[in-house]
Image (cartoon, rainbow over all chains, first blue to last red; front, side):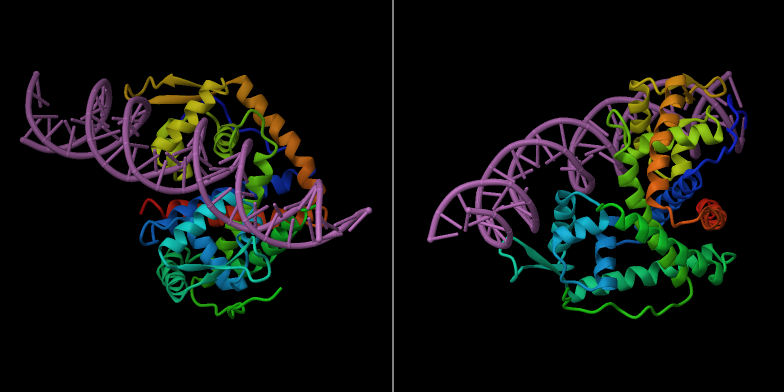
Length: 158
Length: 158
DNA sequence: ACCCAATAGTACGATATCGCACTATAATGT
DNA sequence: ACATTATAGTGCGATATCGTACTATTGGGT
């Protein structure tokens, strides 16, 4: 296909490589987001799933504001997401005994089950799509990305 | 901090590892998105930037629908994004000489310049944040992620 | 004990996303 | 050549995102 302009040379400077990496990460996130959402029931979005997944993985009982910070989204957005989850009985919002202003976000059995089901649905799909992408390579990159995420995460509250 | 439920064991099955990887990718994308947007001028969003960046990297002159497919977003969303870019004179939408229904998306000098400026702004920021994340590691993962992206991308139009 | 700056969460409005329906043009079959 | 089906893009409406402003509560300083 003809292009009126050819791609630029990849002139790499200081953080340039990391920028390229993050760009790639963004594209993959976009693609896998589309994939995941197509497997979610009941009009749930990626945000709903991510919140549920977060709670299963790290333990529930966080406050909404903690979760907003963990995902770097505005607290109003998190409030909306949690409202959607609560309406579907996938979480419960309990008053925070330690802080009269705050709440605690608690998983319900239904929430836990839905997250489990979603993963059961999506995992074979992924395995089918990515037969060539070996486990070992995935595991290796994953380790590196966790390190990267930690760096990104901790340097925000400078 | 006390949690009412402890984290689950990481029981890894078939595509499970890749799922974990994609989850990590999603989190990083979210964090770096917040970072990038805080450095964009004139209320531009990640979508605007991504479109500009795509055109600089792969050459402009694509049709809107091609770009929508490349990013896996609905064509109406892409239409909206492009309208925003055109309003700011960062792209031009020309009629497609090869197809009377279609258009071609062309970068303007302003668009190219803004993308360049954004990268100049963000790159040192990244370099500052990630001094520990060595170039070599970044480059290595990047290669792997490109492979992963290609797999994800090609298996969608099955 | 009291003030006051800081914080958790919500209300509301502006803008963004995206599905559905529509128009215009193209491609395909006969 | 013409009818039929498919495709590019837009208009519109429902829902989502997120900034600003607000209320309720907390905690630190005096």
